[in-house]
Image 1: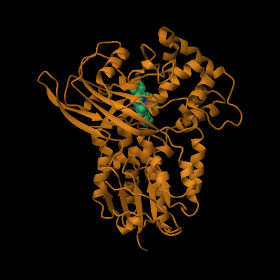
Image 2: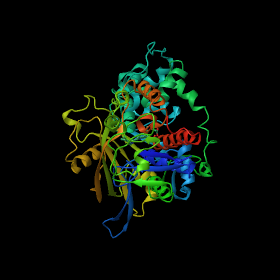
Image 3: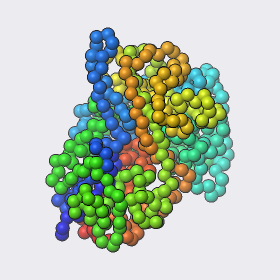
Image 4: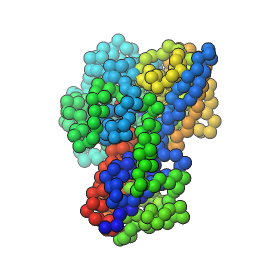
Length: 498
Ligand SMILES: C=Cc1c2[nH]c(c1C)Cc1[nH]c(c(CCC(=O)O)c1C)Cc1[nH]c(c(C)c1CCC(=O)O)Cc1[nH]c(c(C)c1C=C)C2
């Protein structure tokens, strides 16, 4: 049997993970081509080490992240990658007992520590800013079930308003959505964005809190089907982790592995214009592609869904895909001379009372991560404070001319303290970096899956990525692994041409 030709589109985490697992599973039975339009692989993940002086004669380096900075150990697919790529000794871990794990703040104002346990929630009357929110939490389990019959989806804001009241939704749900999707809770689908909350309401017979409590007693995802080696033990009791050289250690190590495989070709600065599906091999017209890649038997696309309607000249699929919306985030990495600030992961800022777009929005800050609290170990320059401010998303501001003093003024206001001028700062604009699933997203994705199972695709075109299976790093690498597994299975069974 001639080898299958598998084309992987997109060299972000999902595409890299797909190519990595394919190469491991089909070392001889497939030619694998990975195509990336950018000059580098890794997608939104980017870690840069910067040499710096502290202004008092001290020299050293700091690690800056332009994308995700911490990873959660609840993803067996991610732990498996750490093991297979030999990254265990590079781990930087944050124990569950550390301030960076326990303390998250909300700018209500003032900056307010969120209770992390039920007991601390009951003590919130001593925190004046949280006092109005406590009754909403205490009443929720007693509130009768109120999901309208037949309701298939609703906005995150609608969901929280129904169970906890409008004020709780504005202050808490909007901040939660800022901290994960950089989006407007009034537009985001709760079923797609927070499936565990939607399921908890069902499990708790109407009460989200009772449902979450029951879910908390269930065992974590089973790692037995994954080759996690001794990484499971290394992350026991760990809240989040990264690596000495940052999250980009993962895509760099995958690229290093792929470069050594004889049946894998990586093409950067290379994009495809269209994909035609017929009963035989796909046709991917491109002057840049070798024949094995321009007539692939299987395609795994990890491209953002926003680029797919142009790529697939098939009226059915783009119709299902075309509803994708994304958040654009303007990120500000800051290095300060060390100064005292609350010790925790960081803080989130809820939606302003008057909504977005008001004159006093300032730079539209969604939240700030106190990087050096969790990941100070990555830096060799001592005596500095590292933070990242995130802005944009639903705030309707221009991104053209970010203005540092505006951000520093916002930070001073949020922290309620004086903040020194930074030793270093950089702005990074991440355009359309997080998908924001709209209402009925889950239903559209099931229709899409069904269409891809039918002819002419018949399972030979996989569409994977944050739009389909979740936005965390663990979700992305799991999807790449699963798509690779399905393709490998088809290739082994000799199903390569419809
Ligand atoms: C202020 C903006 C943002 C912060 N992080 C992100 C944005 C847009 C991006 C982001 N954060 C999370 C994810 C999901 C992936 C994952 O690892 O789970 C993404 C894409 C995780 C997350 N961050 C916060 C919460 C509640 C979650 C969900 C999972 C969890 O409970 O850990 C809160 C949070 N995010 C930011 C801050 C400053 C913050 C809380 C203080 C920054």
